[in-house]
Length: 215
Image: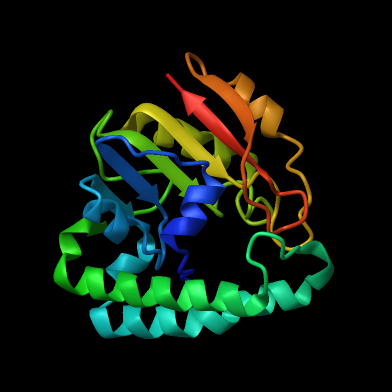
């Protein structure tokens, strides 16, 4: 299991966040520090991830072991990544280590903010959150999860959101191939407005857009 630790500043850039609404869900959040830092800003923030079912010691070990593992994916596809936003591999590693530390601290003192669960079925009532964020799951793993899974997951993210869903990125992991069936999926989301929007973040070459769903 890979549990990636992304920082709050990465979330700000990936999702073009200028301010947060009252309630936010980070879906399949892994070891990100976003929830901890959003709560500090007065937001009702919840993270959901299947990794939260792990016993505490195993979760700590998994998060720590995932730090070098995520760097390995970048090394394997070095030509598909750019460093303009991070500046250097060392800065990226620094952000991820800090995020992991912050996540592990917060999950130990406020475990109620970290809910076990996974798409396409989330353990929340309809419209629970003003904003739902989903990073590096949908479309990223299109080689693992098929079209039907993606459609069900999009509908579920919309179901638990009161207003808006933001998904980043829109290309597959590794080489950054596009997901050919994305337009068809959006056409099947009845009553939902979709927009593909540029964001001020790019790490995978060409992965500088997010999907915004509103209803």
